[in-house]
Length: 107
Image (cartoon, one colour):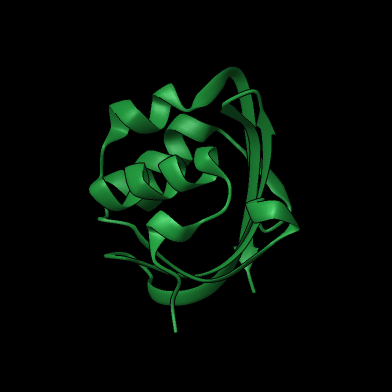
């Protein structure tokens, strides 16, 4: 059972998921602080390289199953053309109306 994106609690996280699912790289970039960081399975990664490889060039898609911590923690069924479908967890640090850090990994 997934949560409709428009029902996600945090407007910045909601916009992040919308940008990913629409494959809108410009909207995605606009949501990040200039010094934003991210990690995948506990290892810090280069955001531009990682998002191109895991989301934008491989048709990444997030189906949110659950949210917690005011919408800053998500349990997601994530799929892309490279890895297929997997359960992942996402954690967001939101500064103002932008994402300053996100962490993802297998759930």
